[in-house]
Length: 163
Image (cartoon, rainbow, N blue to C red; front, side, top):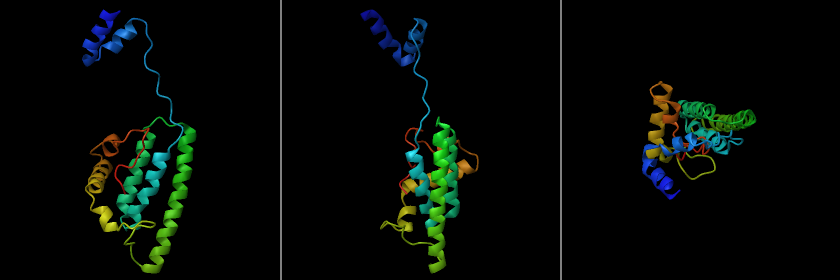
């Protein structure tokens, strides 16, 4: 048995150990179970409206488009997808109402993000935000895949940049 373990260690770099295991009658890895919750995606969708608050509606829409495309590529249960759609609709309604009230009163985009001390200008000059916006534009143009535009794993669903 120790010789077998030593052999597996040597061939692990070639990826052969799992094939040998299967050939000897072992079972393969467990299939990926569908994810039942989308909290990272829910937060990311809500944060996307920070771009809209600042008057950047196109990038906000691109962000949401890429996010929903990423979610569609992930193994979520139908119940999780339905809950995401419901949460996203509620987030959108809330954001649109906030933006509408602000524009009606000030006739301009917000200078500061709601409930933060961060200005729109501060958010938009962050290198990670600028890089994310470039990836989203390339995704929208069909130049890169959703996984290249949104590199986070399905399990994380985290925002691709701190908005």
